[in-house]
Amino acid sequence: MAFEDFIPRNLLKALEDIKNIPGYGEKNASRFVYGFLKLDEIKKESIVKSLENLFSIRQCKECNILTDQEVCAICSNPKRSKKYIAVVEESQDAYKIEKLERFKGVYHILGGRISPLEGIAPEDLSIELLKERIKKYNPKEIIIATNPNPEGEATANYLIRILKHYNVKITRIATAIQFGTLIEYVDDLSLEESIERRE
Image (cartoon, rainbow, N blue to C red):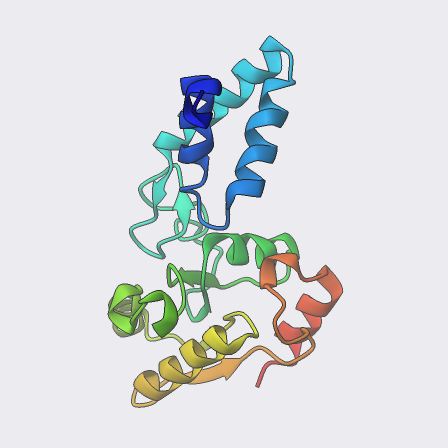
């Protein structure tokens, strides 16, 4: 009997589909699917419902962050200063900074980082939208908060180069964060220090 004939078809399909999630290989897909199957029916239904609800998530038309509104709660908040824009790679990076409750500006989500090995070029990121926002709001400072790894550094250097002719101060978060660490996993104290010591 072939391996594919031995495993239930729906189980095999779930394992294959879960592997389509970035960062999920065979091991993580197996952990998710088999762990899910061990749950009781109520928990299974809750997870399925939560996943279905994700179809309502969209990108804010202003900053590109994941939201359930046309314009996110930060961009639509009149108390947030559009004179300070923190540029991050992904929505989860903005969520991490926002959790500190210190930054009073707005965010701009690039939607990734420049990575030739992964085929991600500058035009694949929301850089043109960032330029439009700079022209529209004339900010005092652009804070580049890409991840401290080769791809993040390449992205930061590219942004600094193409934005330098705008009349705006451009800063980079400090190196309190260990090189190679993703911002979303940095402890709050180190992240806060990196933002405070930006230059």
